[in-house]
Structures are given as structure tokens and as C-alpha cells.
Image 1 (cartoon, rainbow, N blue to C red):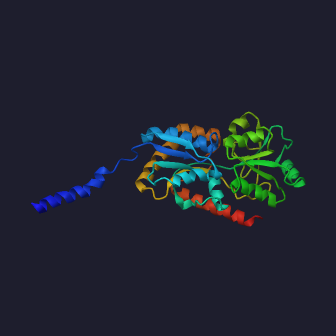
Image 2 (image 1 turned 30 degrees about the vertical axis):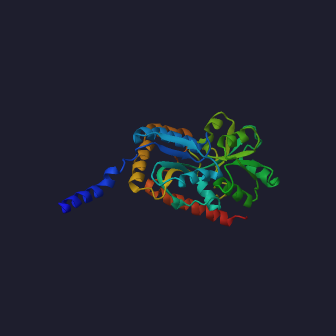
Image 3 (image 1 turned 90 degrees about the vertical axis):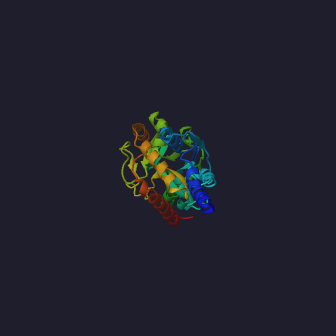
Length: 314
């Protein structure tokens, strides 16, 4: 009898954790946008959350935690348990900031659950700008060192790498960082800064309203939506073709089945017609990236920025 009872108890104990294991997700998912409202990361995250929420079957609660080139929000993610219930945006300029020594994060602190966007950046000027071409702007920068103010997302970002690269070639300009995206855009529209380093999709409304116009695309090929805009390669300027990407990540160490569950849902959301329309409207899905290659791309981006920074004057 004792052996029978012991066997029953052992069976209960063995089965207990399996029976108690909750389905995933069993409660709302928190999605941390690592930049302020109204910017490209915010629009991407809220659009993707809206499309993924009915597929997940639980609410996705989106919040903005801006600061330190996205590192404030990423710090909040790494402070949460690695259980898949907290997701955050990971943006290329945050990875660039790690290469510049800002923040304590590194690529293997995270696992990617969605590779959403990537796009080359451009240099925009206000409609009233006296610079008709990029050659006009660079000529002024050379003749008047550090006279031109450029609105960027921060120091140590790919924005900063591009400006430092231009300075090393004899075109020194002043980096004016704006953590809040809308304030950054408005600074150039309102003539507080002379130019804006940004992706076209983030300032679509200003370009459409002819409040901003692009002078150069930092890439080796012309942008399909702006075929008359000169490339950095045509100017002989090498800034590493640093495409700014946007992904969704969880903490490293999150159970693999939960990562796969999130990846599967977000992948379906990325295949929807609504997302395709969003991509076209915002010019932000230039180069596709298979999920299995995404982390390799992040690591390569980190190394590329570090290589550029190491080659530039301090």
C-alpha cells in the first residue's frame, strides 16, 4: 500500500509543473517604444501592435520610454523577467550608440522577435534653405566651419557617425541632438537648425507638404522614391551605408517556445496588406531580412559603426 501511495504521489509531483504551466501568452504583452511619440519607431511599433494584437489574442500595451538614444527603454526591458511578456523596439542608432561607448547593452543581451524595417537616411533642409544642392551645403560648410547646425537623434548614433565622417573630409557641422523626434523635425522646419539627418519615412508629412526637401541619401544607390537625389557614393563620401533598422526584441534567455510564438505572430502581421501599405507610405522596408539572419545583421552593424568610429578623429 505504501509503495502504491508513493507511486501516486510521485506521479502527481512529476505532472504538477506541466499541468501548472500557463499557455503563452496568458496576459497582456508590454511593448516599450524606446523613443518618443510621433517618431518612426513609435509609428512602426503601434502599427505592428495593432496588426499583431488580434493574432496574439491578448492586448499589447504600448508605452514610450525615451532617452539616451533608446537605451533608457532598453534598460527597462532588461530589468524585466525574460518571460516574453515585455517586448521593446531595437533601432539601429541605439546599436550605434553601444559602439560609441554609450550604455552597457550589447547585441547578445537580446533576442529578435521581428525584423520590421530598414531604410537609408538622408540630409534634409527646410524649404527656405539657400542650399539648392548638397554641393551648395558642403561648400558652405567648408568655407564656414561649424556654422551649420544639423538636427540629429543624438551623439554616438549613426547620425553622429555621418556628421563626423563629413567633418573628417573637411565639412565640419554642429550636431544638435533632439531626443524627441517631433521636436527634431520641427527644429529644421522652423529654421532653428539648418539641416536634418533623418530617414524619409519619418518626415513624410513634411516632405509631402514641401516643408522639407532632401539633398543627399547616404547610400550607394539612389532611393526609389527620390530618384533625383544624389547619393553619398556619387560624392565619394563613405559613411558605411548605415541603414537604420527597426526590430522588436525580448530579453536574451526568454524561453525558445515563447520567442517562436511571438516571432510567428509578428511574422504574420508583417505579411498583411495593411503592413505592406504602411511600408510603401513610409519608404521604410527597403531591404528584407530573414529572421534567422537578423541578429547577424545587428552584430555586423555594430562592428561597422565601431570600425568607422575608430577610424575617425576624436
